[in-house]
Amino acid sequence: MTCPYCALRVHFDYDSSMDHVYMDADPNDPKQVYSFYTGYCPSCQNVLIIKRNGQKVKAGKSNENIIEEDESSTDIVFPKTAIRQPLPADVPIQYVEDYNEAALLVGLSPKASAALSRRALQRLLHEHLHIKEKNLDQEMVLRHFW
Image (cartoon, rainbow, N blue to C red):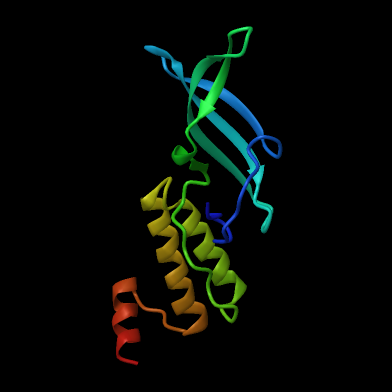
C-alpha cells in the first residue's frame, strides 16, 4: 500500500501493530463485516484508517465466530486523497503547504480542492511573479506572454 501523505510504500502487520474494530457490513447478511484499522505511516508518522472486508466463520472446537478478512479488499478510507508526487525541494514552503492542503481535499471535496488550488495559483502570481490584474483570467494571459 502507498501512503497518501508521503507517497512511500508501507506494510502493516494487521495482527499486532494496529488498533482495530469490526462492524457489520450488511444488516441482511450478518456474516459480512468490515474491519477498520488505525495506524501510523512508519515513514511520515501520519495517521491512516484502513478498511478490509471480512466474513464471520465458525471455527475451532467451541465453534466460535472468527473473522476471515479478504486481503485484496484493503482500502485506505482516511485520508481519502489521490496519490501525488511531492513538489520539488526548491518550491517555497508557503506554496507547498497550499498545494498539500488542496491535494488532501481532492477525494473529499473536489470543489474545495479546486478553490484552494486557484488560491495557490493566484498567490504565486501575486507574490512571486508580481502580476496583479482584475481577475485570474487576465493574470494568466499576462503570464502566458511574458
